[in-house]
Image (cartoon, rainbow, N blue to C red):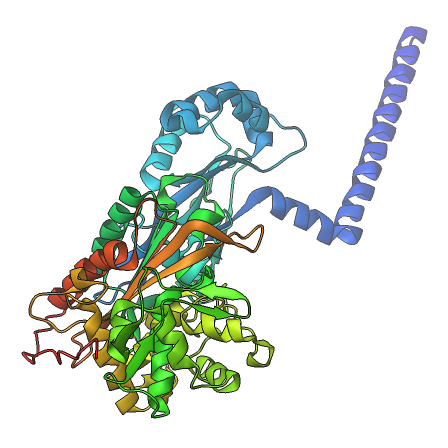
Length: 586
């Protein structure tokens, strides 16, 4: 072997030894790493691999419907979609993705803001667009797919809708951005309506695409139950319309109207103006969303005279024909009190005091009761406590303890000043007179219907007798005189039917000063029909109307129109009996 060959052989052997040592070192490193992965960090790496290859999404429960008494949907839900993005997958193509999204959904998406979110560093989740109709979301996903753009995902959800717009809006309430009920039935029955969300977990490719036939986990959602109301949506719509016309034409601050079935204590309609449409997407202020029938307190004025007379009649101290001498004015505790019209000494019957709405005649009659007795009757009629209607935020009104009354308090409370009530309290109290002296709590929900169709009816408390049947009939007779030509509201007559009613006009209190505002009034009308076999009661309140407004001239026509519609809707025929024709003077 030549020297050159020996040198070449030594070089080859050196290279082989180096290659073997390098290979051995590589195998040692890989072996150690493999031992670390498989022997020590198995759980951590498995979890990391799983997270990188799976995606979870919520399967929203279908929110239950709120239905009227005839099964008409007042609040319902429809399929919607929220689009989300993984910026780790969308950053490179953010301008193209943003362009497609804004082109499909229009001004609801901000192009430049969306680009920023699609490129957000160290982030794996961003919203692209919320609460889209399913068809619109499908257009976005289809356009992105055709363009070969990945990283945008679909998250299904249930969106709320109110098919009749503002009809019964303040009774229904609305949903917040988290899908929870705010106000009304949506809040009161939120857990029942909501159901339980499900979930879906599936395997995705590195590009974020779902892998067909790969492992997935599904947790089924449980839909919510339906709430069955006592509301008649047609009567509600009509009452809304009639009330809105009057509030607008008189320039009033607000108005409300409530109709009650006095035999069942079911509320058939509960209207107010102004109101709101949750589907309109406008800012919802407290002034719009408040339920005035049970949350707004006010002084009821002369409608309260019916309660004073019922208390007296129950004690056997007054009848419709009881004579009362009414002076031109009275001075009590240094306060001069008069009637709404100037007059000399009048000789009125008790029916005449109610018919002409005499404050002075009511005071004189009420003086037959001491403070404690009068207070006890007011409490028995439910004033100073919630009605139990089953809605959030109900007020108890304001009724001071009888032990604290002055003579002036006794006098003014007898005709509805110095006491604050809610409309539902007045409806419940006068409803007892219409129902033969039995008072029950008003309700707006008849039951709950499960997704399977079974119905759990609402359990109502038993009615309680607050005055005798004879006392209730006596006051009803007095109230029938109100709609006669001699009374304060002949416009409330409904041809063919006997109507029992009472007007109300009360001074308004300035909430800032606590003092009465001169020339500012709350006017109202309460009535039930047929007077000789009562079925429906309607109460109308108009707050701070401008001009020459009154309970008989402003609120009574609204009562007449709503009551006429209710009688027609439910097929209530006249009894055919003649009105009593009770004398109003002696």
